[in-house]
Every structure is written in C-alpha cells, then in structure tokens.
Image 1: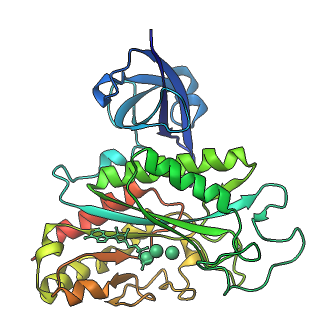
Image 2: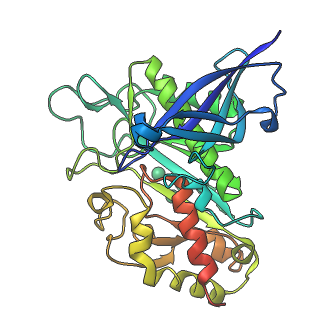
Length: 337
Ligand code: ADP
Ligand code: MN
Ligand code: MN
Ligand code: MN
C-alpha cells in the first residue's frame, strides 16, 4: 500500500508574529487532491490557541502542494478552526472577503538570513560591522553575497512545489534577501507566501541558519529594514483608464491609516521613519514612482493610461499576508466611485 507523507501547516497564536507549525500525517493511497486531505486536529494549548481544559483545535486543509524535498510528500496549508468548526480568532485567511478572486496580489518578501551563533546576519563579523550598505544589493561574489546556497535551494523548492515565485534578489543590507510571489486571488497569494516562508525556514534549518523576519533587526543603525510591499489590483484598477478613479481609491486609504498599520506587522514604527525608502508611519501619501510614499503608483500603471496596480509599501516582513490583503480589500471596496 502506498503511504504518503502529508505535512499539515498552520499558524499558531503567538504574538506579535504568528509562527509556523506543522506535523506529518501518513495517509494510505492518497489521491493527490485537496479533497483527499482529511480534517485534522491539534493541541491548541501548546500553541496559545486554546486553554488546557478544552484544547482541541481543528485543521481545515485549504491548499495542497507537492513537497519536493520528501518522497511521497505533500504540503497541506490549513486554516485553524475552533472545536465547533468556526474560524479561530488567529485565522487571518478567513477574514478575506474576495470570493471571486477579483483581487490579485504580488508580495515582495524581504528577510535576513541570520547566524544563531553570532546573533547577526550572515556576512556580519562576530564583532563589529561589515562595510556600510551599498555593495550588497543584487551583488555577486563572496565579499558581498552571503548565503546563496540557501536561497538557490529555496527557490528551486518553491518552483517545484508550484509556487508562483516571480523573482529573487539580494537586498540592500548584508545577509538580506527578497523573493516575490504573485497570485490571482488574495487567499492563494497568502497561502503561497506562508508556504514559501515554511520552505525557507526548513531549508535554512539544514544549514544551521535561522530566518529573521523582524522588520528592523539591526535597530536604528544605518541598515535597511525588511518590508513586504503589497502590490494589488482588482478589475477596477486593472481597467479604470481614469486618474480620478485611482485618486478616489487612494483617498479611501487616508482615514484608515491606523487600521492598516494595525495589521502591517509588529514594530513598524522602527521601520517607517521616512528614511531608507519609507514613509513616516503617521502620514499617508501617494505618488507616481514615489518610493518614499505610503502607496506608490507604479509608472507602468500611468503609462498604460491608469490601468494597472498599486503598491502599498507599508506592510513589513513579519506581517501576515492574509490580514494585509483582507484590510486592503476592505478599504478598496469602501471607495465611493
Ligand atoms: P519593485 O521592487 O520595483 O517594487 P518587484 O518587481 O519586486 O517591484 O515587485 C512588483 C510586484 O508587482 C510583483 O510581485 C508583481 O507580480 C506585482 N504585480 C504586477 N502587476 C500586478 C497586478 N496587476 N496586480 C497585482 N500585483 C501586480
Ligand atoms: Mn522588489
Ligand atoms: Mn525589496
Ligand atoms: Mn516594491
């Protein structure tokens, strides 16, 4: 009898950033389809998701990917439900109001490869600092690019798992990297970011390297922080052909700055300072090609006659893409056109 290894992945209840958790279920004669993945349960009292005297939480499979690193392996992204089958309060995916996949999202996930021994990024000496920022972005060579084996292996795993990675690059700080994932459908985009994060953690683990998702792991020194720019569009933005429509949608973001920042990742005040290609956390601004704005209007959107997408530059590397997408969708839908 063929035995398959199904790795059920979920998000725990830790704050301020939910961690990835997973466990393996062995299934006989697995169909290879999402419908063939049974519901499962776990001990929510061990993940800050339930009290010990009523600890069961449910795992509802929502997306399935082949696991390239494991024979007969599959990655099963799940949503956490309470014992009575309702979305758990930590379940950001269930907050997304986009049934018809009208919304498309492209997330640019930045992160640091982190040496657990020195507690510094790869490429940093145990004492002191490497040369200042400048040579690392999109670099090649052992002097400036650190951890390429890991990120190459991660890229291959993502592609083999069927994730729609659109690119990767070395980022501005030493040891800092980025990958981009795009999907038509907000839930799918969130699923793919979380599974890519999972694969990155698991790959780096083999090398004894950690991932630092914090948005400003080097504090307020002159080193870039990590973002997760959210590029988004819906049918209206893709076809508007009107600056006025874009302006109305952008203005809908102005009165809800706090609601957005609340789900754009922890400690974002350390990153959104107005320096290092960011806007101040308290302001709201937008502009064509403006990388110092809260929301950038990509120049291609204007060149195509106001048909395209927008880039919210405020979400950070540790934000939950489900919650980010849910909030953006809510605000875009609230615009009075
Ligand atoms: P930059 O670093 O210049 O901000 P990237 O190339 O890293 O840009 O990322 C741009 C992102 O925008 C990509 O992930 C891409 O998929 C996404 N994108 C492009 N067109 C759309 C669209 N119509 N809707 C949503 N996202 C889009
Ligand atoms: Mn980018
Ligand atoms: Mn970047
Ligand atoms: Mn960007």
